[in-house]
Length: 456
Image: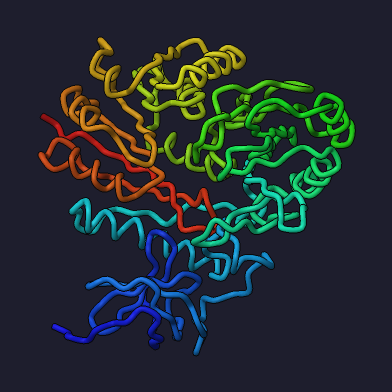
């Protein structure tokens, strides 16, 4: 047991031996753990301790004494400042290795699984220029210039961007030029400290397959003089832009979107093709940011399920039906559960547009609707938010006893926790875990876990 006292501000030499699920490098010094952003495994570094606790510390990178073989030059000139990405300095193949390790370690440490069946991370060729959506806070600089970008790592300081290498490059002209138009119009910029001013965020979306784009200004209220004229000018300037919207968020909140969206010019949605179907996507619709890898993960799910056309499937947390509708084409009956009524309205419309008639949708919390379905599903697909499933959802699944469960998760820690609850009493066993890289250049990983019920 060490008795060494660490001091805040102390500089130590540290070799990085792992990467955390938040993207920081991890080193060990004097039997304690040190977390260091902007590092990679095998970096030998000098770091300055910033927050010191009895068993761990956070530090900033002061100098790289010997770079890791996995370290590369970032594609973005502000990658060392911008908080949008954590891993642009890491070779992409090693990013995939790190994410595989992250999933495996969580399943072992949190889930208690021994040698979990984790497949290689699913990825497509687009590790840059892949994001179909980007939402930027807007601020006014000290010199009075309108700026939009991401916050600097660990701060609330905005890093102004005119392009972003991880977003679809077709959105870059809008990011650079819309700021200039806002400046020329003299529209006020929101000040979160005083809760004054109008424009809070700039949101850009694109259909990767269709090329259709949406531009949305998130505003405190709608007091933007001549917004209709400017919106028409944007539509004329950008042929692929199909709609300009205003989203009103008048609350003191960290949430980006408010509940009220108005289309100022064009139409309030874009069309996107996914898994051979056409979807309508609105400014505040949840849709995975990496279209190609999301479709590849769906193909894995379809392959694992091997639906024969007689199955009853429940898609819990179904959203606008992104997974529901492709699976409905292969099953006898599908029920989608979703708490957001606006998403269900879109799901119903998308089903009608694609001629899919064997799917129904229920509005309400999954933990309330799942126990009251009135049927025993053959398969349940889960895709909950980051916090994972409510306790009552796990209880309902153990009571319903579907033959198979597919659990899609954006946070592996809560996935591991819930899989442990489903498997600990011997009703289910884990047959495959498929990580997928929906968020290249970041530490985030999407994961699909496949469970099979043991025969009675």
